[in-house]
Image (tube, rainbow, N blue to C red; front, side, top):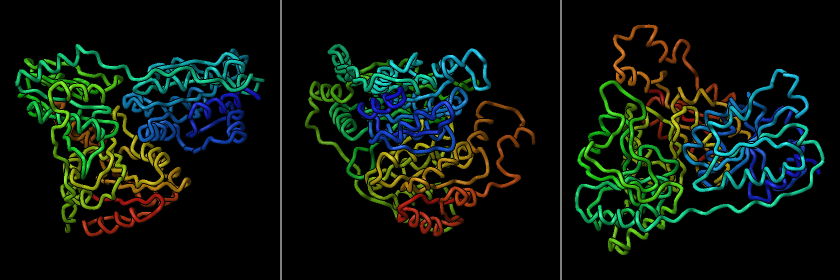
Length: 514
């Protein structure tokens, strides 16, 4: 077999069985190998940012890496935005990036670039295969790197001749390290802090905001008087009826400062210490008070669940009863559309075990608390802050979980970065309902203009934040990608359209006019 086939067979043998792809000439032997090798599902994306974002969504729901296929340096560059988001979410991913044949690089052909240099800031592991004989082993090393806890971005660069030349066969995956256990010193320090009975926050992230972690953290909090919060953004929170509820550190700096001002200790459990998303004049970067001490029980790459169980035993909380959310959906509101009513409607209408992808940005900040009593569901957020993730993330989640409804809560401005994701959803028949919030602006940036103290913005400045002239017709865009939909101008129309989307087995758009 050639190098490309040895690589594909190695990926499949290593448990990588989905490839999100946007190939070009240099990758044609890899494309041909995908056709010859059973066991690899191929999903085409019309933009590389869809490809990398979909791989992120797939990894968040399965815990396993997908492969991407990208075309040389420019193709990689187009996918870097959502590679950044995936890296911040610690999603495992194996990127295969084609390159010119090794002997062709010296001729400075138009697509020549420093692919390794572009990949390194957004990858945990980068390598260029030097020959077809090493491709399989390099692919196996990439898979192992991606699967290293808590999940890493691995980028393997595949020169065209290493794909078409003769190779040796399938390579075995090297050993993948497990999650490192937390040391007894970290447990002892957390016990000491909790026994002080001073205002203490257990700040949760990673596996600590899945059901098992939340239940353990809630037992510890109930037994010790500590409080719980999740970090502001999380790759995936399991929530809703029958689960422990947790609120998040607010995004706005003033609200975050108010929420954290009373704490004297913060114990990090799979989370990072809270800092402001941006710097603002005359406001602090660190969101905890100056007299608040930060302690780490478990880092995100460590065995968070074992650490929580151990700590629960040490503080006598292993069998402490905890409260879970009751199924109590509110009535579906009627009348004019408001953000409060939309949040209530989502709480009432979310289907059981839905996967909610939240890139609603400004429109969606009130939705999270209003859906706590909805049926059990998962809630995914943008971890890296680079907009344009929502539609690709929902695409990958739907590929990963074809038996679950995906709900994309999507702002109009960020949707324009990756609207091609709708085409992939239609082509693959993915079970996605897109709720598109059309406020015809980058509304969050209007707020940020004031937050950073920019003075007296005029027409030129405000035009940079406005999506009118012409207005974007999202239903036409969706239909052009093969996605049907309906526009909602009242809460009654929203409820009806959302119901149609949930009932549809394929993608459907609900355009909400704000």
